[in-house]
Image (cartoon, rainbow, N blue to C red; front, top):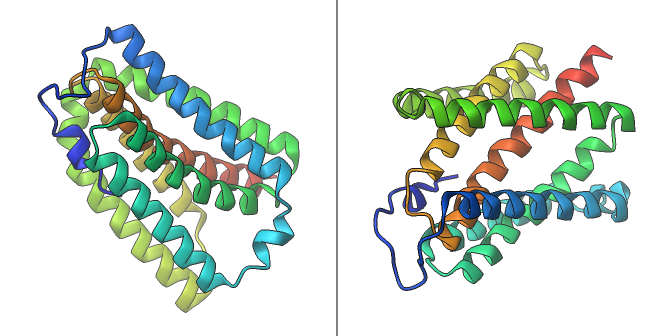
Length: 222
């Protein structure tokens, strides 16, 4: 997902009253928590069978359409209400994916994956704050690596019908880098409510992808 419009902002706008660093980061945290809470509610209340009954092509088209529409809304808007709406257009389809995935695993394993994801995310945010220049330098390599891994994984699954576990570890490393990178960028742009929501949306996608891969690794280990 391309959220470069968000992180290219350098000036305050009509919706952009400056915030203190603490309030700005608090809004990022609350926005992330909202997304995770929505996903938890979806997992608890929507049967996996209901989602699985949807035709795969219809599900995929709906998922991609909602995500891209949401990204377009929050990346191009400077109104926090519109950006929050766009964020939810990303959160909901991700929730369906999470529901399908976690339904395959024991609850204790899911909680372990959540715990590990939280620790890794916090660590990468700290590193992103301490070494923003380093993460800025590697972001192109991260993008290239992610595209390469996605292509390899699709070829493995749909052509050869296999999946190498090393792919999951590589994706974990890539999204660790993205969390550090996006957190560093989030704190380099004007600190407004809208930018906090937009930054949270980018971090949300990084964190959820990280969680899903960690869960798969733990599931394979067990």
